Image (cartoon, rainbow, N blue to C red):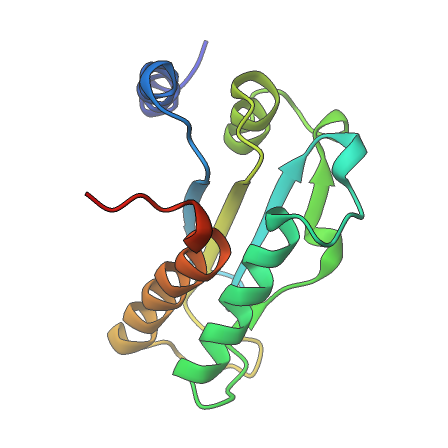
Length: 150
């Protein structure tokens, strides 16, 4: 038995995948009781773990770089290489694991956003706006060669 929103999200992605390729999936979460700032982790198959040339490694690096630009070097995003995990080590019911393993989406991430960063800076609406903008800029940098306009 699944939560209705998880069930619905899986159905939407399955239906969308029938008519087009899904290049990136972001599973967004918010936390109020953590001091990690914004962070993400991704899931891939075992053969891809450690191949840092793949977008699943590049995308978080671009997000980190864009966050540093937006926050004038302030530590608002945590990214570590070990945040890319093998599907075989995770539960199949976890959103990005399901989408990566069952739908073949190679770039599936969980994105966590907290109320403050590891320096105990309380985030403002502008900080969240900048984080969203950093994600959008990182998407463009990671996948610009595959974008179709028109």
